[in-house]
Amino acid sequence: MAGGATEPLAVELRNVHKHFGPVEAVRGIDLAISPGEIVAYLGPNGAGKTTTIDMVLGLSRPTLGSVRVFGMAPGAAVRHGLVSAVLQNGGLLKDLTVAETVEYTSLLFPRTRPMEEVMERAGLSDLASRRVGRCSGGEQQRLRFAMALLPDPELLILDEPTQGMDVEGRRDFWAAIRQDASLGRTIVFATHYLEEADAYADRIVLLRRGEIVADGTAAQVKAMVSGRTVRATWPGADPSRLGRLPGVEGIEVRGDTVIVRAEDTDGVARYLLTETEAHDLEITARGLEEAFVALTGDEHGAAEGDGGPERGAGEERAHPEERGVPARGEVAR
Image (cartoon, rainbow, N blue to C red; front, side, top):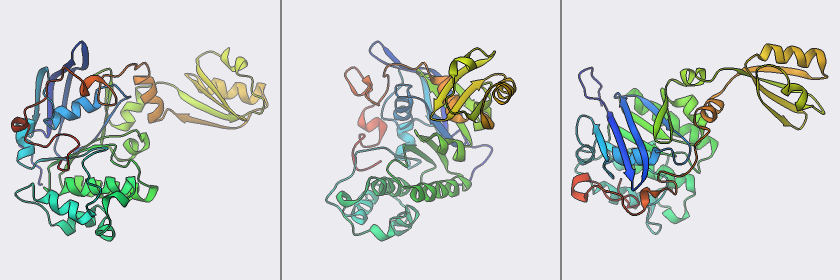
């Protein structure tokens, strides 16, 4: 998986639109991802994340625009073993053992990494003889990860990859992902754990209503939201007093703690210290969660796979021979 300056982009979307009847789930997305990048693809439910992922995997075709994966059509990239995915659900036969599942999946590819190697990388060596139905949600997700590693893909797409994992499992998983990226593998992941995006992504792409509203490092995305937050201990806090201060954008009271979002946090801190009984003040910059809410907060309605219409009638799916991959929910990815 060696990278090179002359290599094509890992993922390239040009003016991509996707319609489901009257619903425009994706609205003119332009996105270029270079080999070896770790990219978090984030947005609220209905923003277009799953719709975009389906098009990159060749499971659905754009209504307008083009999708290229390593310079070729998504289905061709999948057939060449360049792309694998770890999805949230489906695709596991409960009566098989972990080892049998990995072994049978390996038969779908002309060449694979050794079975023992991918199981070790996914942390499954001690679970080889356990039936899938007796595995926890986190263990089943690690099994999907092992299956995705079999063809040694250049691009790995992860949809909620650590769902069901405990803290240690999540830490080990991301350590393995970092190691893969250092060798040139491209990682694109969607997650509701914003702290994972903040900690592990080289780049964050935020979607809102099918459009990209932010694209940059975690620090760059956070900087798009002005202001800071003042947190203080103030028993019996009176939010109405703070609401009259200039530049105050939001006030939240949690027990004896008051949290104020404001443009002029120095002024808020000065008021709290001199005009109230507040103490233990802390001023912090806006985090990724605040940026996420501010940039995507007016999202309403479903337009993607999380209950949206893309699973319903009127969708134009790629023909099986064209996409070259089993349908979502089958064992193979």
